[in-house]
Length: 96
Image (cartoon, rainbow, N blue to C red; front, side, top):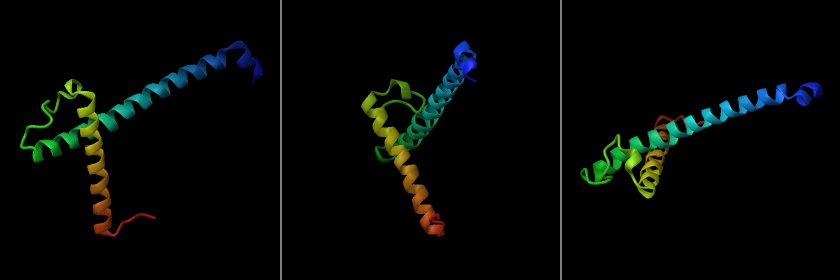
């Protein structure tokens, strides 16, 4: 095994696997946090502000300022969590 590390073959393979895992982590983070959070938060804020906030359209997330994006995304994820918690309590499926 040490010979493989000395030759660099296993080390190169492990670096490729690590790179692939980092890409997958980035994609997962992007999809979960940014996309889902933006979608739910955007619908919420558009509903309570009668279409005035955020100014960007649903598909224009990249044009939003950092502060707006963070606010909308965290609100969306928070609303999802609260909805899941509330429904779990109502159905008596509070978990283990």
